[in-house]
Length: 147
Image (tube, rainbow, N blue to C red):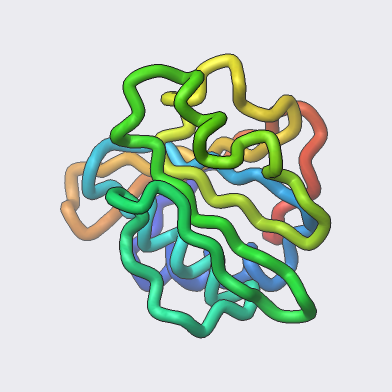
């Protein structure tokens, strides 16, 4: 799937994902700085029932939120990592708990340690600075994303 979204449509799509995706699910958010990864992560979390304010996890690296029905949303930012093995210090082995949505910005920093079943969502700027090209690719056999 590849689409062009403005920020409002990106947020609407993210909320649909949060409401309808099966769990546990790992969603890697890829793209350059300013591409909308955090916008999409916040929208997915809202759809999953998170009501807390969600600051960027760039400095904390991992932020955990309670969602609806006992679910959990993890917002992880690997931008500051310099070696894939650093993910273990973040509780990487615990990802994939029942009811969990793991939203990971800069997943490529985890290298070969990425889970074999996941979604890779790429956000890329286009000529119009208010729009983003968004593509979602299933790796392995993750739970399906809502349309």
